[in-house]
Length: 384
Ligand SMILES: O=C(O)c1ccccc1NCC(=O)[C@H](O)[C@H](O)COP(=O)(O)O
Image 1: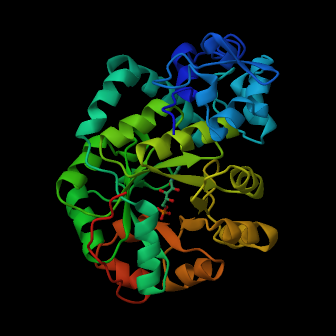
Image 2: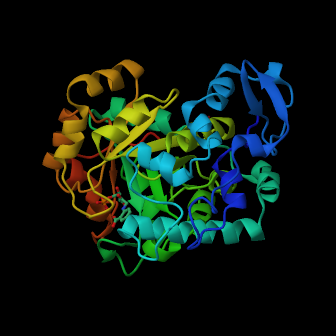
């Protein structure tokens, strides 16, 4: 596949978040990225920062071609702001604030993240991040590890979360030794680990991710971040992540398409998180998605309701998920073997669990309590 960088990052590079009009803050449209190249009957442009290949229209593969001709790109070219495009897709989180008051905590997190990422990019531009990719440990097969664990144990594979705090629950664990916790999770059967890297709201950071990998933990690692810019995907990989979280309630379709392409290029797994039918439908309409997380927690209100997983997987949607061979992860609010059985009966093959493990004296030993049995770990290297 071609090396692409026509992504969301191109937009953030030119859009300064602030109390300006959304139109003024609008980022570059594809037509503004670079010189025109003829593609069918539609005027199209090559991205400025493509690293190879896109200069030649003939080199465009089908995936890239349909992306560049997608409805979202046309909307963009017609001058719609990213927030207008997102709102049309039912996304309530705004990227470019027109007021100073966020509607909810998730929107506040995203606004802060936009500023944080633009600062980080000044310190370390994408070209520098890319130079460090070669030094990163090889990517591991996140989905393969989940499937193997499900087959081995007959219960949903565990993605155990290493998080010190959260906006809804505050500090979850005072004596927080992430490497020790990660090792204990692995020893007691976790298939993969989720590492919070957001500092402001979760007290996480990328040093934790690196330290866990360097300590010899073999489980594939999910970088649990609020990704709004492709730069973060490259950065996560450079720090040793094997998977990244993409939240459908925050990212419009075009970002998801571009970011999942970038993930594939980097050997990263994208975990697409949804919370309602509309988000699931959007994600199911995007090609190449392997892993979907259904978050039982509403990130705007913090309300947790496990029946959301069941509701979303009923009927036609569940059929599509099965037909496409997508692995579904049940996320949040899972405390007991009954909770795990409930989501397993809804056809979930993996669970993402934080609070109910991390708050126990020994988070590793709490795993059999969550599943009602010991979970076997096969410690093999899951390299992509
Ligand atoms: O948990 C929060 O308070 C929160 C707030 C805003 C955005 C995301 C948030 N949490 C992310 C998650 O959903 C959980 O960390 C993850 O699914 C594990 O949930 P749990 O087992 O309930 O800790």
